[in-house]
Length: 66
Image (tube, rainbow, N blue to C red; front, side, top):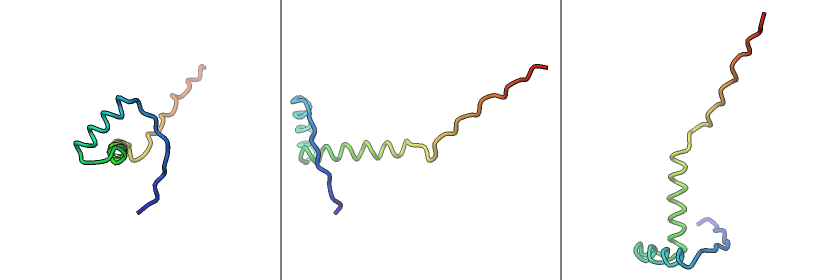
C-alpha cells in the first residue's frame, strides 16, 4: 500500500453534512467518499486530456512590398 498524504481541508457545515449523507449512501466514511470523488475526477480528466499538446500554428508569412 502506498503512503498517503495528510492535509487540512476546510468545508462549510452544509457541504460537510451533504458529504456525510452521500458517504452513508455509499457505505463509506467521509474521508473515503472524498477520496472516491477525487479519484473519479482525476480519471475523467485523464481520459479527456489529449495524448499530445496541440501545436501552435505558425504566424502567416509576411508579404514583402516591391
